[in-house]
Amino acid sequence: PTYQKLMKDRRGQWVDYDKDVKESFLFGIKSGLRQSDIARVKWNMITEQIDNNGELHTYLRIVTQKKHKPALIPLSKKTLGLLPKKRKNSDFVFNLAGSTEQRSQDLKKWLKYGKELFIKDVDINFTYHWTRFTFIQKWMSTFGDARLCAKICGCTINNILGIYSEVTEDEMMNMYKKIETLDKIKMISKSES
Image (cartoon, rainbow, N blue to C red; front, side, top):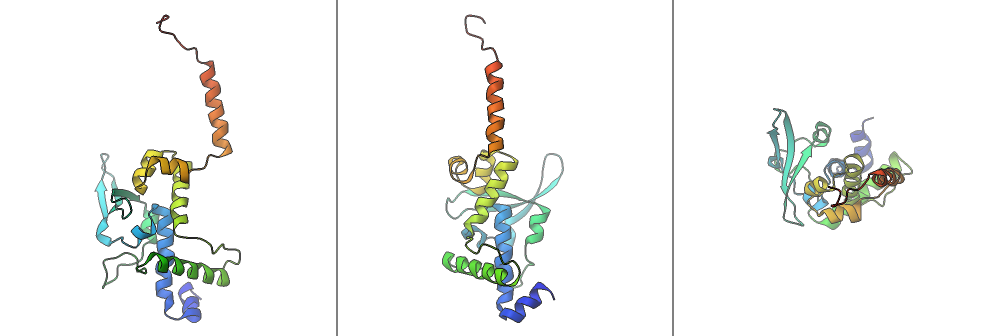
């Protein structure tokens, strides 16, 4: 049986809404958006732009609700594939509850049913904020550019470095090697130049 069939048999009509909760959660992991911004994403905010090399890229243009700053979020083909189909009666990408509290309860409900039906050891104490945390940690471990990450997420570089980023042992060892290299470089004083 399909996921949809299993859910309908177990929970009735909540299954359609359940799919939006799942898709919005996965979209949060790929975009780094806050849940308040995920709930506000409309189809007309997703735009395409050609870069200097003539390549077409897809972006989400949104003014973040918390900081009131414009964010330009690159969307990969994989991320676009996570989006639901357009609805006839709504411009919104995700059909989510209006309040933060209700969206959080819906996420817990989705995780609880997932735990009961599919994955017994899933942690149901996730919040939408973990999607943002996951995105930032993945970005920083892959690219290490706090400036760009802050721009994409609509927050400060200090938040990226102080709250979301963790320094791994490998990073510390690499930094140690760089410091050793610096120690070997002969410094030229002004009198020598």
